[in-house]
Image 1 (cartoon, protein in one colour):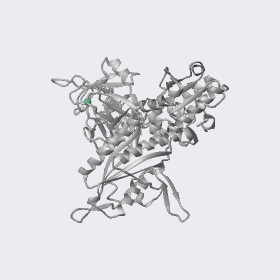
Image 2: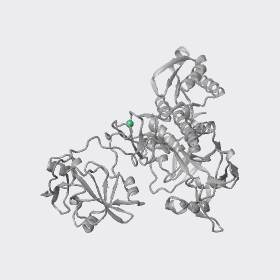
Image 3: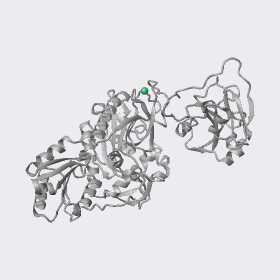
Image 4: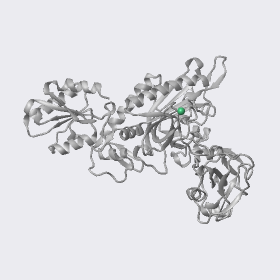
Length: 571
Ligand SMILES: [Zn+2]
């Protein structure tokens, strides 16, 4: 392919509206153009990468017993109403009405549809298990689409659904998909980590998020390098490395201390000359319009996902200063756990044998020697803190580290959650009808593409892994006007194409600098320069994008064999 013929408009400047490295590079290298907020057009180079990822996904899914189907994007409302998700999805679902008044949606996912398709046929237990997948677009009306392809409103996913006889049988379907995912993400060149995404699953396997470490990732997790434990921070459980010293003997009485102007936890710790772990943080929180007082250690942060689960609420937020004043009668910096009229949630690591310092519930005062159980009690005790780096692994006790990542895939056991309301049953050995046990498995194709760029780039541009590169080789003839150079470039281009290599020929009359910059920006893995070395010695300069300093001088007649070998051996 001639570079001048590809519609891949490049940008010299870093686009202002792209908020990630991958988003910027996709625009700069001409892979993508934005059509509306969270909606993109894949240009040729971007589409080629997307198709290569999809091809690897297909090979591994097929190789692990799944079969490809294609479900519609436009779906009737009824199955969604049967599972309750028509309402539950709320504004995130794109809903529409046809000319006869029947309601439809643009599919945000396909559990309902696939379960309906399978449930409408009569299958015997002998035909189980099976696993159906498709690769298609999904639609979610995100409030704030961002990070380019990472959080968009139209996105491509591979989603698979396994159908099994019972809970035990799902294990093997799940294990197969886990292996397929591991192969897929390895083959596209990602360093990734499957993290547990299910609260009851320490050491278990019922839900995993496949996460690629990235600084701007939306998924935060804690991981242990010692035993391999890794869990989403929303669910991760761990103990702090150190507990404050406990009180022994007769417990001292509560003592009020005037603390004018002392509000934040660090101010209080400095004022009392103590460690923040012995101070209690008391926070007024509104969950589904109901106020709660949250009490946790001063050096901990509230984990809202855990908290909402503990108080069985759908949404929540910190109370405003005004609400604190109205409900508790003090300013936020002086809120304490004693004598409050709202229900109290106490974090489970707050102990009853430690003399804590806390807000006094009166402006300008703190109290010390506050004992949980004696001076205040809880309505709910729960794990509501966010795990911190250095906390101890819940499996092996070694220190955890924390990181953020991009979730590129998930695997999840659904049980009979969809089969029961949608009446999807198989016929068991005794002739009775029983609901399928299902698993679902998703891979974000666009996210995977973005994650590959996040992990494979340098200051000059993208560095594609060979397996997903839009073109494997870029031929860069310098001295375009020289007949011998141009003829050698054409011969190599044709020879490589005949050998099945996807190759770009930079046929433009641009300067060497412009050509090198573009080849670097677009990230083709192998660069072949035809210039002075060729004119002097008849050799091409072959280098890898990932290691430009290391050039091989390859005689023209050996170039094709050399490049074919390079493609085979380089990841
Ligand atoms: Zn561990």
